[in-house]
Length: 88
Image (cartoon, rainbow, N blue to C red; front, side, top):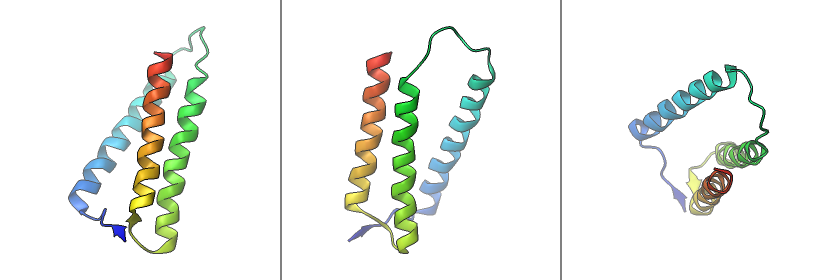
């Protein structure tokens, strides 16, 4: 059974914050580069790509996000957090 992630107000608030984060990341990226490589960022990018892919599959199927897809997204976000903690 699809999970109704369609409460427009809530979705728009999440979207607004993701756009804000993206804009801030662009500003961070515009700063002069440091001397230390951050290989964990490649892993974080891959995890966010998987989140996007999961949402895209849901849209392509023409239905809401399933409970399995929500768990998959949660797993990817937990992995992002673990990667950032590990390299902090």
